[in-house]
Image 1 (tube, rainbow, N blue to C red):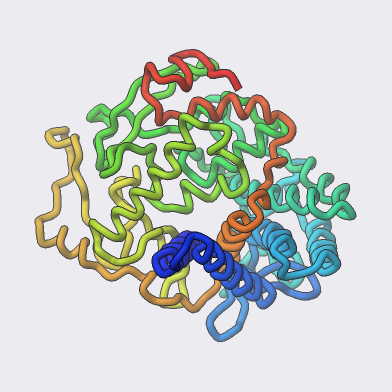
Image 2: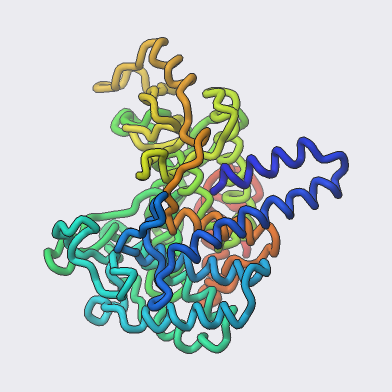
Length: 453
């Protein structure tokens, strides 16, 4: 999604003869991408249930399954399509009434209001097998439920006829169910049939922070949960499995000790994501105004993330494109892509289909430090061909939803859910001021103190 918007804007800006012409060209390009993306959703969505499939194949066939993220993405995409002018208010109401009616009948777990992760998009029934008919253990996913909550909130605000119904579903969703106070974090997921409960989301630059925002705003999670995730791992040899040694300092907020680390990039420093992808860093701010609420943190980190992606794609690897995220690939499947050097994952997420290259910035000499690749491996990494040079054939609902949200926000600015966090918003504004990119002594807040909202 990001690479398409970025390339389109760069191309238009480079050929326009005046700022006005560039702006008009940008509008036309964004509208064209938005229209094409919405057409994908029309093809992906079952007309009787109003649920989108998870995957629309190149031959036009649909996978059986859908997820709570897919449903949320379809809901906010419908609102975006109406705001842009691709559909009318009457069609938006009809589509969302159908979707909400199906959601209201879908099975949730006990009294938590939490939805299962996979449903049959043709009926809304919980799936206990995968698309191939093999057994699958149903799970409740914290982050996927959060994306559904975002969709419900946005539709409720835009379609007053459905507000009470979407609010009822939203209010019933208890995100405190996932909270583990001993680590001040939330579970990845919970499997009711087996009791499996893997713990926990532990990095702040991640799409999972949308679950923290929703949970705190609803009053389901304590505000201190925002300080339970790593910015980076610490800079000691104990954490030398990360490829880059961070620099930082320690602060205490609401009794939580936080190492405020960051990684070096060519244009400065940033707080990295786990896999080095655009999606992890920049999906939540499509719906939450982090750059406004965190002027000394997210407002700095988001553009630095983009700078790192541009530098890698255009300069380091020389692909001629940039913007690396998990996406559909050219084999009718799905690939995990990122910029290895700005991710915390010790295994790395390659930005291409070639072998990745380890980087080593600062941990040389630590015990059990993995060996560096030879120069030939590094050259192979730099010259690899990225899948973005080709147009992937399959359409993924979540990726399409991200693309349409981005295009819509660029055109109408406030399609995202500024009102998403109405309850508890003041507290969240305070918390966001302290996500670290700034150094001690700056004017964005002092150690152990909270900056004024």
